[in-house]
Length: 304
Ligand SMILES: Nc1nc2c(ncn2[C@@H]2O[C@H](COP(=O)(O)OP(=O)(O)OP(=O)(O)O)[C@@H](O)[C@H]2O)c(=O)[nH]1
Ligand SMILES: [Mg+2]
Image (cartoon, rainbow, N blue to C red; front, side):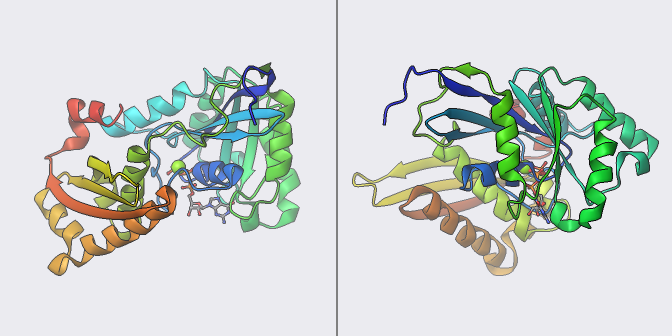
């Protein structure tokens, strides 16, 4: 089907909010496929990633963003900047919070101020999304809606479970009610603006988040060194480097007898094969780039 040129409901919808609120889970749920990586640890997402939902009547370009938080670290400052920019230059803002955490009136003064300061930066119609309602007693939902409605003129406050799917259809209808008419911003057959290379790097990062502890996930970056498909696209060979900040971290990522690196590689390869629909040969290296997260040039390479 060719929808090109036709005016439909079309626009950019930023998904913003504190780390770990479920932003990436929500985007994947809308798309019905995994584009963004998801882990139980905060600050998983580092870049802005578009997920594009097409229908005859609309094209919604969701923008998954890094979690909003306060930090003095160069990498984190870069991540928050990406998210803050998404509060302004979009058609709709979805501000996501985790309802299993304290309500605004129960938050520490400092936290509440931080939250409301983010709201003040919003320049587009905004919808407050109360996520993880599967985690709380249903009776608490109405008072919660009242509580968040009082903080900012949200167009709507919608309770959802990004994980289970509850409320997500209502949220989509609310988005469509506020989306302007216009041409599609992307061809209708691509689910994301991210390259396969980038997504494969993210998959490796996800496995490092899931399979290592303490500071390792936050001290890790992934570089895809080469990405080659053979002629018939029967096999894709990917060479990647896991970059850490210190020698001791390199040892942890590799593990005893290389076991840890092997399990990261196996888990990543499976997801890559699912994403690419082909067999993947994945070769991983671990390299120390001392204090890379403070190195402006390296951060630029990573998109900051
Ligand atoms: N119970 C429950 N868990 C959820 C829900 N949505 C997300 N989660 C979980 O919350 C954790 C964080 O989810 P993410 O989607 O990575 O959160 P995020 O906001 O993208 O996090 P950052 O990228 O780190 O800012 C994961 O363990 C998810 O499975 C939900 O509706 N209910
Ligand atoms: Mg995320």
